[in-house]
Amino acid sequence: MEEPTPHPLHRRLVRMQLGFQSRPLRTALVAGVLSGVLFGAATGLLEGTGQMTPSVEGGAELAWSAWAVGTVGGVCFGVLMTVFYWRSARRLDAAPLPPETDPDALIAARRRLRQGRRSHAPEVDGLVVHLAAQMSAAKRWSDPRWLAWFCGVTFTLGLGSNIAAILLAPQDVQWVHVVGAILFGSHLCALPWAVRSARRARSLAESIGGSERTDER
Image (tube, rainbow, N blue to C red):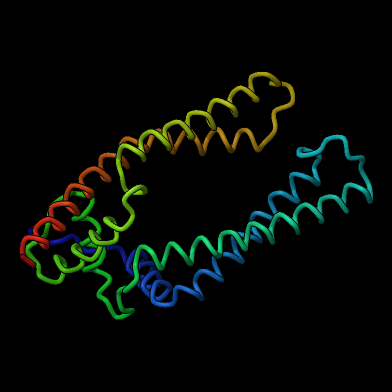
């Protein structure tokens, strides 16, 4: 069966991912800086609008508080995410794919892994084996049962808390609760598909690992 042709934008994004994965330290630094800036801006905005500490009065005191909360929160979160990205990249993929890897073949391999079946193309099958090894390295994060329970509880609590905040104060609805309800609700609806894909991919990864151990014997 011939693999479908990916969209040019999808191909470009995969090529960028390959470049990022080949330089894990630089990627972790950039991702950490971006995460810190976004987190700092979000917390500073919430503090500046009085949604984090309503007791703070307006004017210069509120502006100073917003800058302080945003700066400290952004720096701490950025450093934490840099370390997290770096350790995750080293643990999950000690030998990343070279940047010249064919994006079409990698897209097809990811699709095959989600479907839980191999391809008839040797290049695609080789990439499926590589992706399966990554999944085997992340035993907890790729476990469908853990994914279903943890994400299900998290998304349900997030959706419920935001809906409760909206219903308890319908005359003064905060935009952050509306956005939170939409995000948590959409993630909760997509969770069954993600769990099914993770279950298929996990099964294929275990079968590939078992066959490789048999071949080594």
